[in-house]
Length: 457
Ligand code: F0G
Image (cartoon, rainbow, N blue to C red):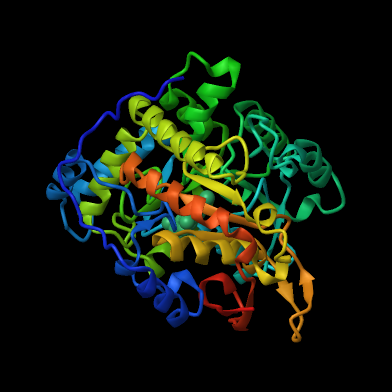
C-alpha cells in the first residue's frame, strides 16, 4: 500500500559528519579496508547495524529518569520484570547486559562436548558461544531460503522435515535445544511463520527438547506474520508476539533491537532448574539478578521500549521505511534478498560484481566503494564473514552467497538519507566493473570479519 505518515516527529537532533572523497579515501587506507575500524565521526549514514542505534522516545527518556539505582530489588527491576513477564509469560526473567550474555548463559548450562543446538540459523554470537562451550551449532534453514530472488513469504522458517529427522535419528539424543531466530538475521532477515513455529513447538514438546526463541526482532516477526500469514490477518502484532513466546519454553533477547534501547537484554525461562543454574552464572559474571549488568534506568527504558515496539503504527511505518530504501536500491540496479523484511536489506554483491571471485570478497569491496562514494557504512555477509582459506590464500570454504547488509536503525534516518544512499549506490553501480577485489593481509583466529586487515588487488 501507500506509505503512511510517520507516527512521530523529531524533537532532538544530532549532527552527522559530511566528509570529502579524499578524506574517505585516506580513511579507508588507514583502516585497511575494514569498516569496523572507522571512527564513527568519519561516517555520514551509518547502516552497520540496527542494534542499539535507534532513537529513544520521549517516554523512554522519561522512564530513564525514574530509574531506581538500588543494588537489589529496585523499582526499575520490578517494572521491567512485570513488563517482560506479561509479554512473554515465562516464569523466570533474568536481565542481562545484551543478547550475547543470555546466549552464553544458555550455551554454558545446556551444552558441552557432544551436545548440539539446532536452529533455523544461529546468529554469529550464538554460534561463537556454542563453540566456546564445546557444543555444535547445526543450521536447518528451509529449502525456500536458498533462492534469494523468490518472494516466498517465510524464508526464515526452519526445515521441519530435517528437524524431525535429526530429532528421531541417531543424533537425536545429543540435541540440547532448538533455537528459533525471529526474524532470521543470518538468513536475510526473513520471518518465521506461526505455522512453522507451531509445528516446531509440537515436535520439541513431544520429545522433551526445549525450544528457545532468539527473540531479538520478535515484534518485526510478528508484524510480518500479520501481513503475510492469512490466519493472523486480524491479530495485532502484540497478540502474535505473545502467542509466539508461549509456543517456546524460553527466549534469549537482545533489547538493543526490538527493545529499542541502547543496551540491554534478558533470558526468559520456564524451567526452574535451568533458570537456577543460569542465575548462578549470572551473579558470577553479569550482576545480581535484579539488574544483570544494567543500570536501573536501562531496565526502565527497555520496559518502555517493549511496550512501544508492538504498536502497529510504529511497525507499519518501519516497514514503509525499509520498503522505500528497498525501492531506492532496486532503482539503482542492485538486487536484494527478496522479499525485504524490516531491519535490513541484503544486497546481492556477488551478482553485481561478477568479476570479483568469492575469496576476493565482493561484499567487502562493495562496502568499501559505498563508503567512498557516500560515507555510508554497511557490513559484509559473505566469504569474509563465513569463508576460510589455506595459508596461501586458496579458498577452503565459501559463503553460500556474497551479500552486503544495509541495516536500518529504528526511528533514526529519514527519506532524505535514503535518497543519499540511492545516489551513492547509483554512482557505485555505474563504475561497478572498475571496483577491485580485496585480499586479506592479517586476520585473527575467530570472528575474523571484525579484525581482519585487507588491501585492494
Ligand atoms: N541474536 C540476533 C538475531 C542478533 O541479530 C544479535 C545481534 C544477537 C542475537 C546478539 O545480541 O548484540 O545484544 O549481544 N545482532 C547485531 C547485528 C549485532 O548487527 O545484527 P547483542
